[in-house]
Length: 259
Image 1: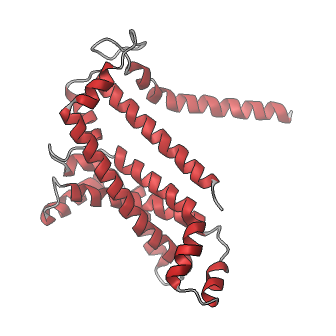
Image 2 (image 1 turned 90 degrees about the vertical axis):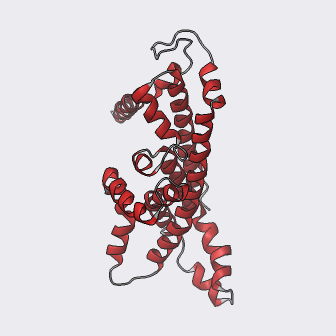
Image 3 (image 1 turned 30 degrees about the vertical axis):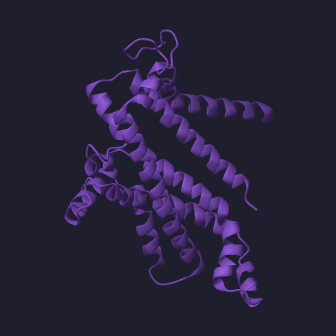
């Protein structure tokens, strides 16, 4: 009976995963079609659409923008989120729940509300249509993922290790660099990966803040879907799917590497 229950459980899990992933994965074979329109099942096999994306100046510009913004946003979010998570973990103070709620609020606030608010604020600061504006906006979106990930790692660290290091004469910086950081590194790296993916895939806020010179890959896909949908769009979507899946796998590996 237990074996039958396990089989039924994994069957339900597999069918649910297939139902959720199939609409996304179906884009991948469509990107190899030899026709000029999206068809399923695809006709023939060619990599020309990937070559078109890689060789097109507008796609190249969007790819560079996406990479620069995602790397910068992930870096800032990782530094700020790690510091905030460690502070929340180590100290008890009045209003701690409020601070935690504020840090995590971008995860639950509708993205269109964030986009409108950021546009109104950033327009007054002259940050609209700039890479810096996109980086700051995506950093706000990514910080909660880092905070949650680092808090989870910090909660599994022996709390007596850092005081022991300090008691043996080590400085706070040395203790953080040689004791605390290595122990929470899986959470930090996982948070950085999710921060990168969050920025890489974000489109709504980018639509409000970017222009023709700072548009990202998701904006290019959005414009293609509205105006000229062809297999090149499917090729870009397949690349995004691959990078997102790679990021999730890396995050999983980082979690497994916990010391």
